[in-house]
Amino acid sequence: MTTDLTLPGRVQQAADRLLTAQRERRPGAPVRDLIGSTDITAAYAVQQRVVDSRLAAGARRVGRKIGLTSAAVQQQVGVDRPDFGVLLDDMLFHHGDQIPAGRLLQPRAEGEIAFVLATDLEDPDLPRERLPQAVSHAVAAIEVVDSRVREWDIAITDTVADNASSGAFVLGREQVPLDAFVPRDVTMRMTVNGTEMSTGTGQACLGDPLDALWWLARTSIEFGAPLRAGEIILSGALGPLVPVRAGDALDLEVSGLGRVFVTFTRGEYS
Image 1 (cartoon, rainbow, N blue to C red):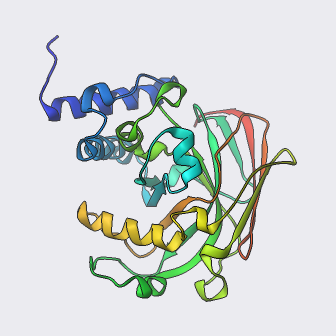
Image 2 (image 1 turned 90 degrees about the vertical axis):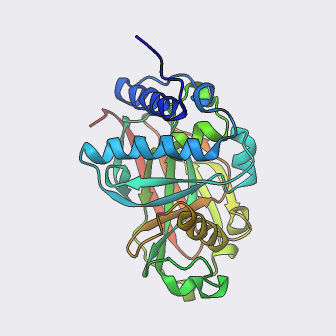
């Protein structure tokens, strides 16, 4: 069997490695040996192939996620810049749901603000002050990040390629308009089995979760995939990541946005 050493060939090999890890329920080697540790364009090309495979299997795109917005999380995973990924409908859960732990490999949870867009964001010159008008409402959210790379041994290209280390996300019930709260001023508290495990504020997310959304809007245009009305946008962590496992119960509170509760069961992936 010959090995394709061209960049498109290595991109496909990287995508295959990540998809195999997901399919076999076993984290694998990083992909930076194939695409390098600094080629972000190649990493997003891998991500696109991974997402396209999921879409071909029947998943539906429902939004985007911004990752690595918190300095604490960047330090935890050893990277130094934000990234983005695609949210699919089979990742979505709601307040009170149970998540089968068997669908995840190395899950870690974080508290976030999710924005739901009211309009498309296609203008690369959109003034920052007009951004709130493009948001329908916000909800409290738990993002469960996951990695197909064993032991979270990731550089920026590994996590970008791995769809920004996406796993699952859980939305709260309360839909709050932006004129009812100030995203940068929120406080976040998350407990696991009743014990406080993570706290933070809106300012931990690139200084302001709306600034994270603005970054994503412009970056998405650069990549030829503008944000669209109705998309759910996970704006990034408000505090440190928390490892989770089967049997855990997570309870998140974000001031002004309410509560999100979810449990992890011992069920298998479906």
